[in-house]
Structures are given as C-alpha cells and as structure tokens.
Image 1 (cartoon, rainbow, N blue to C red):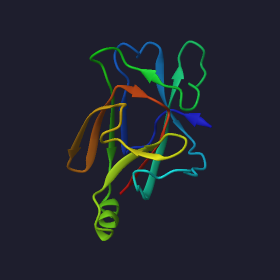
Image 2 (image 1 turned 90 degrees about the vertical axis):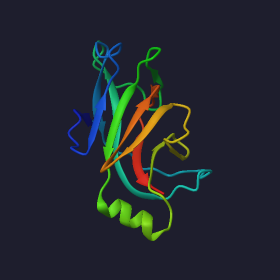
Image 3 (image 1 turned 120 degrees about the vertical axis):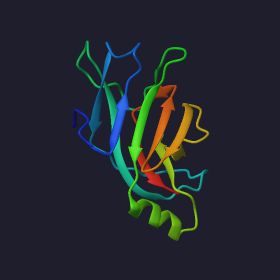
Length: 141
C-alpha cells in the first residue's frame, strides 16, 4: 500500500527535470531479510520506504527500478534522527549511519554509487542522490 509522503521526519525533493513525471510516495515497509552484510550495518530504526509514482500512468515505479536525475540535478533527501538513534549508536561505540536496503543488503549512503553528497546537519542528514531506487531507509551503525 502506498500514499503521499506524510512522515514528518523525512523531506524528499524530486529534481526539476522529473517533477512533471513523478511524485513521491510513502510505501508500506516490506519484510527486510538481508542475505549479505558487507558493510557490517546493524539497524537501529527503519524510518520508511520511499517510492515514486508515475504521474502519467498513476502506477508506482517498480521496486528497486532505478530512476536517474539529469546531469547536474539531484534527488534531495533529508532524514531526521532522534536522540535515541544517537544514544543507541554511541552505546555500540560506532558512528550513526543512514542506509538504504538494495534487496540483499543495507548500503550506507556515504560512499554509495547513487550518492552525490552527504551533509550531516544538526538533527538530520541531507543527501543529494544521482538516482533513486525505491528503498527502505534506516538509521543504524
């Protein structure tokens, strides 16, 4: 099930070259069973699953189908973290990280091929993404 983005801790902007084609969806988070863990990522909290809907067809973009922004344009994702998220990360003596699930594993946004830029702000992270793949997103470490 999917509907408009209503999660107040997440802001998502579609690049200007794609706003006429797509709109943002908040999807039900499916069961997540990683089969790999190359980044040694431990989930603290799944925030949500974002999706895109094609405005022409009215249908959601297929799960994990890549939608790429035009040259020099980016999807912008901002996700708030809580004091509980940071406390849990600190109790494990590991830094807080934001990751997406690619169907097999959790992939930290920092250093991911789809990420252009990560800015760690007070209370939230701001990401510029070159492409979007309909991922569940989680805080962890």
